[in-house]
Image (cartoon, rainbow, N blue to C red):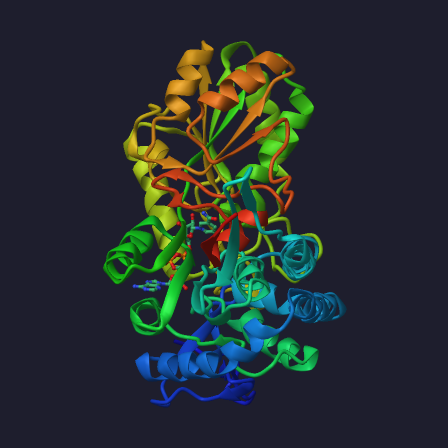
Length: 489
Ligand code: NAD
């Protein structure tokens, strides 16, 4: 692999264990590639079981002090981290963009602000986490104590690196656990910077430990470690299945946020301009690499041609370019391997009889991005709702348009995959909106909007999209163990 420049020192990041940056025990490193250039620009620890063991040891030593701190005090530390993320927003956004290939403009308004919100939300929220009592008049008083689990593992993917990393870490810490976290080896940069911010915030050593490395290496060791009581995982469905197979016999608590193949249902009575505009976002934001992206767009036949024309006109305006440039609406895909995977699905869609309406080609940029992993936003029509292109997760800037005639047909097709993460409905008919929402096999349903998030709401998928729910009290419940105490009156 070519490197960015033979004269510049590589950005070599380290593990964050016991409040310090330390090299991996075996001294091995992995290359980190910048997706926009295709060049190696840094190195990350290729950690193994020895590094995970060291992190768990640090977490174990920190645990008695951390769980004994009043929730408000723990919360204040987390709010301080949120403030530091906001103060360093620009540096973090630049790092996220370089590491992931996403437009820096997107990282500035979505990824980094949300990472700060995650800490602020759970830092304050934990003070409102009340215990339940069950009073039986004259008989007994039951009250429920929620103990932290102890040491927990958080494993996150590459698509929204700091956003999803902190979405797990913040509630785990707020609830009084110590954490060993592993970010994706594809996008380690902002997780590394988070360690620095935790130092600045005065988070006690060992409370949060960040171990870098591959899934089979560091990730597997974390899932297997007997002192790690729970695994909160976000990533692919196959990986989730493997993690469940490893962790379930050890009776670990598991939260699995997995893949999706989300439908957009566009009814003829919708606000068409809003439906088109938001569908562009839900199709192509972050190059379609958001688990909540809607990749199957079902449109009621009377407005099919009108929707298609307006949608394609907007697709033509999505400039693919250097993620650092303000005018770029589409950045690079995260890696060459992922680009090849997405391209293989474009080829499959062709073989399955799809008509290519837009895109389909790799984009060759000039200058510094000449070797980057860019792809045109791609739209197909004419594919059967049950073909592989319409059932399997592509996780890139590829969507299909399909006309439907009845509500029942749209529902049948929308529910016709193994996934059940999210869905979007566009209609002005409130009765229909609720009726359809309740019949969709999706953990999250948006009506006349997309990706509008309230952190208090339960978040997660049905079917192969996951097990458990994150968000609000659900997350605090996951990261605690309920104990009932019964007092006879
Ligand atoms: P991935 O499953 O390849 O990797 C996710 C994380 O798991 C990485 O940190 C990886 O190193 C680690 N890992 C891999 N093998 C492991 C093992 N054996 N033990 C422990 N850890 C292991 O997923 P990805 O390619 O990074 O992310 C894309 C996927 O994530 C897509 O399927 C997407 O839908 C999904 N995703 C889901 C949500 C959600 O909230 N449901 C959010 C974002 C992404």
